[in-house]
Amino acid sequence: MTGRGIIPADTVRQFTVADDDDGVRLDRWFKRHLPQIGFATVSRWARTGQIRVDGKRADPADRLSPGQVIRVPPGGEAPEGKARARKPLTGEQIALAESMVISKDRAAIVLNKPPGLATQGGSGTFQHVDGLLDAYADDGPRPRLVHRLDKDTSGVLLIARTPGSAAFFSKRFSGRSARKIYWALVIGVPEISDGMIDLPLAKQPGTGGEKMMVDKSGEGQPARSRYRVIDRAGNRAAWVELQPLTGRTHQLRVHMAAIGHPIVGDGKYGGPDAFLSGSISRKMHLHARRLIIDHPDGDLIDVRAELPEHFAASLAQLGFDEADGDAMELVLAKPAPDKDVTKAAAKAHAKQVRKERRGERRGRASGKVATRKPPTKRGPTKGKGSPRPTGARPR
Image 1 (spheres, helix red, strand yellow):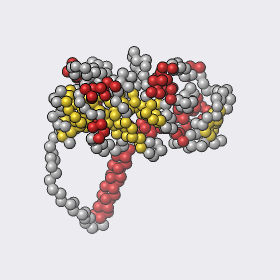
Image 2 (cartoon, helix red, strand yellow):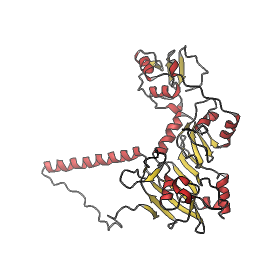
Image 3 (tube, one colour):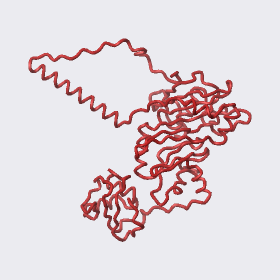
Image 4 (cartoon, one colour):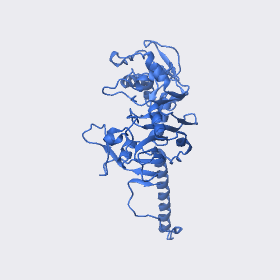
């Protein structure tokens, strides 16, 4: 939608479809840009020919293309459908929002979220990233969250600047093609220095969904995390690098606690044993260090977030050198393919099998014996038939 100034709702309005709305349904376009106009009104206008796209009648299910002009008739904004005005941000809130910015372009804003700041609001939570997004609007659409970090987790948080880029980034996160690296301090030192944790997770009953647990009953959701020990402080603590290969709630925290090495400061999952004595901070030591994700323009976003003060101080006190983390970064595991790609490959395979079977049936019907190339002999597969391991295992 291109800017044409503020057009009164009691006059005919015209909007030009922007690049970010390419392929969007007409009714979805209204939800994005004119949410105060309900679906019933949009449908009625379409039936009576009052909505026009490039001068032609349009249906709510029609797909839009950049450059098309949408004619919107007057009215449609019921008093009860008006969006509630947001409270203006204070100077302090605007300063906080700007201080978090690592980089920004037309499609994304990358933040370094501090520990203690929630991503979204909730019961008793009034200061959060979502409430600060108006600071990045710049007279355009309000930016949108596309993923989350726990309140006490710091680090890279990606914000989409437009509805189109929000859809693009959301698909990358849900399809697991976005790759994330976390740093953490953990209690003790894992026996396996480079391993994979494969333990299903489920909501813990009686916690209102606020706490997760390992669930091997068959009801839990698959969850896999890779970790590598970067350095150790005797047997007291270890500095580890973590890569979540799935995106379950509190996944890294639950997994590290499950193998006996809770994240330092994570009393929720590690209890009293999750804290180090001495001057080490009691704040949680989990930081989203790096994010790699495709950009809508075809480039790649690859960004790192500086450590918060308490985490950097703890590394120094334990004798760790921060430069060792990036210098020895693990090779990022290949992400799982997007669901759409997997489905397409499965359909193509099934089609090929059906085609081969039709050929065999034709051969039998004509009195000919259909032959098939014998399969190539292969040696025995190591470990075939063995049960799938769970918990930490070496890479």
